[in-house]
Length: 78
Image (cartoon, one colour):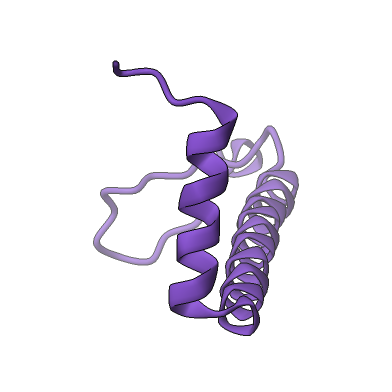
């Protein structure tokens, strides 16, 4: 009773196509594909700057995130 056969899905697809029309369904599919593509590109761009920021830090640099005044502390100054 809870299983859907191929014929059930074809009837549902036919009803959806009749209600919305094939042109509107095609536009929705294109918009959805564009949104997924944009999301993937955004994720790639978000990862790229993080990699370049890590490369800027040298092993001799000490970063203190709780500092309230400007100070430059490296191993060379000690």
